[in-house]
Length: 128
Image (cartoon, rainbow, N blue to C red; front, side):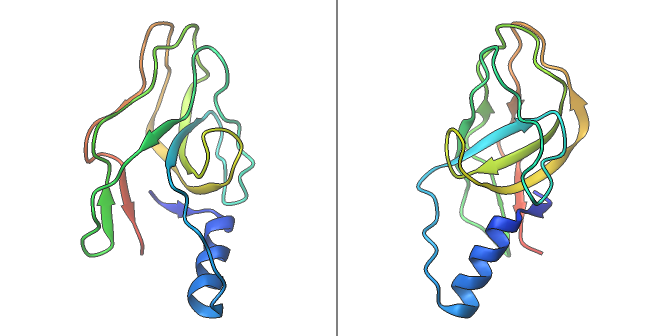
């Protein structure tokens, strides 16, 4: 994912450089957005019609890079969702804090009965 949120940047910097405790989330959730959430977490998240954030697991990082395993599959849409333009990682299944975000290369329209999916190793995290 391309961008860390302001929340995560500040907590990591305080933890590493100021010896301030930061407790990482026990579970990380993938969220879908119809607008850019930005580092400030102000985007429009998909809502309703069967949408719920999905928990995601990552493999151990190598050289600052990690990716998802297993595949991430959202429930089937019960009605059309807004077009998904961005994805985000959050620290809670509802509300909570945005951790990282990224624009999709190609926006995706999820129609009634369809699932949004990210295959194994396609959600890539990097620290650069």
